[in-house]
Length: 272
Image 1 (cartoon, rainbow, N blue to C red):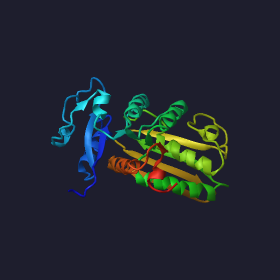
Image 2: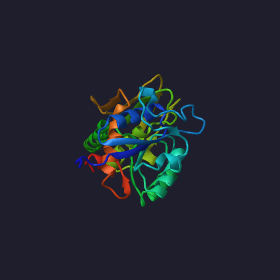
Image 3: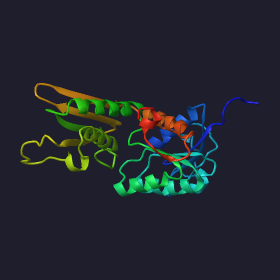
Image 4: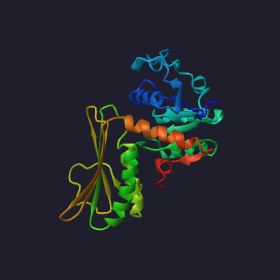
């Protein structure tokens, strides 16, 4: 009898996209994971192909658009798609008892509330950035913001590839939320998302955001604390989407022990 535990059976949404392919590669390389489903949108040219074809591998898993068929053998779905697609996927996950790791960004407050309701029935890890390093940075920002609460202006600068559709990035917004909470502020009231023309002197209670889009930048984020005579910059730069994929697998392993509930990467990493 084998002493090895059963592998984590995982389906990937958006499997022909850049992140989807990175997730498939990570699952195939992990000894404790098994790819059981690969999903893509209707009309995708990848439909009907083997999920490992881009790697020159035959997995026996065919990319399909029918959600229930793609999830029938899975215990987990990893989803880095669009808000409307993710919400539709989660409804079916709830029906089938499939747990979910959500890296999708751009949700409205109402959509986040709906995800929280779904998490009453299934276990979900949702984070704007699955990178272990980024989530360590979030803890550093909490400490820095408390120590630099007086006399420092705070600006958040982020840069991503030309294909990213939401701005500021979900990670930048999360950084802003962490800083604002540490300062006892409400980000919705103090955030400034653009400056143009004669804006007047900077309000010291605000948190500014600047967005760059271009080329193939995977993701750069800097939080600047600008004081008198000094600047403190806390920066994270992603050179590969592999870090998001590895963080997602850590989230899967965490969810294996959770019956239901909504969790973040701070829970996964034991930093709550």
